[in-house]
Image (tube, rainbow, N blue to C red; front, side):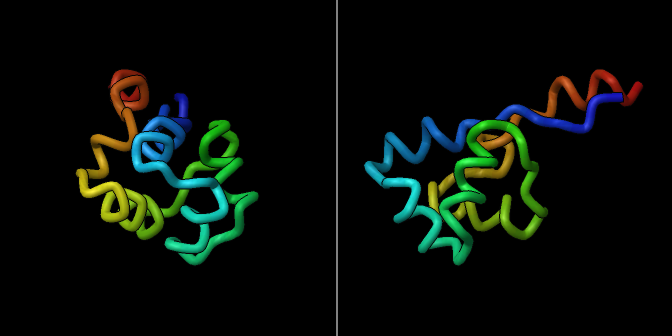
Length: 74
């Protein structure tokens, strides 16, 4: 079963005209964390996912695509 989800963090960050450093500062995490999330090497905690959605004024489901994970869970 796959435990990695696709995300739109890079796209949403670019649409918001934020650098990785600026986004990291808003979230209280390191720039390296943002790099890892965007590259799909790290799935954030639920709290961090919620904070990402809040920064982008959208739902968690708009930031992260769980469809592949949900299909594998059947």
